[in-house]
Image 1 (tube, rainbow, N blue to C red):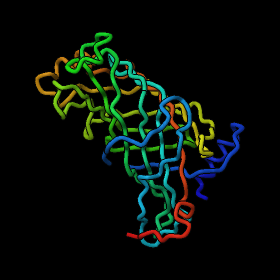
Image 2: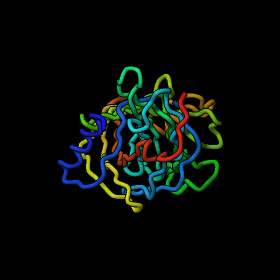
Image 3: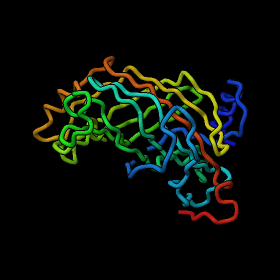
Image 4: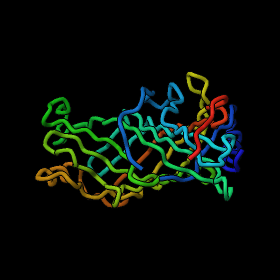
Amino acid sequence: MSSIIKRLAALSLSAGLAGTALATAPAASAEPTPAPSAQTTADAPPATLDLSDCPDVLPVGADPANWYCNVLVTNGGSMKIGNIDQQITAPMRITLLAGYDPKTGAEISKFVKMRSTAMSVAGGALGVPGSESIPLLALKVKPQYAGKIDIDIPNRKTRLDLKLKLINQLLGDTCYVGSNAAPITLNLDLPDITGASGPDGTFWVRIRATDDTFAVPKTTGCGFAAPIADLRGGLPSASGKNHAELISYFGGKGYSEMYPTMGIRKK
């Protein structure tokens, strides 16, 4: 068991939790893909521990007993970005690979994949209540990974770089708030870390994360509609004018448990 896992277990037990210790990941870093499998979208543990994005390849010489696949599922809370207060109505799932370098023994963490679903923005493209169902006025937002995630549960900190794809018939397919080069960088405090048991018996670490310090840039790639998109969103929006409060569930399994009898390919 890694030192990070031990610290996570200690945090859980100190909060009066019971359950099986799970794997945890320090830091990582890549590119988004399609929607996730069905998950609970309220503040409740996910219905299942979905490890379908976990790679079946480990570094040459890696001991499966010291490697873990973890998921961070954000399925509650909200983000206030400029003029828009967006409730989290669809889950975001980030898969991470964590283990030890077989040559140096150093802890390694790698970003594997982020899956998210576009969420409807209340008030649509013009901020008019009730316009969300009108095709030309509807606006959706899809969170995507923008290059960095660093989960530091023992020190109650997490950094997450995001970009937000804006979806509207008039905005084209390249309209974003933030980018890989200039992301929305959340430096989240983790004031509440507790434990929960999912419907399938999975032990989860529940994390409430907050940040009031991040800045949000203007839109990019929105063509002639960029001024309208920026006006609607109140962008750019300086630090202190935005707020994130995210509810996430963190869980995982070791590779020796995931693949008890089958070999794991080494690369």
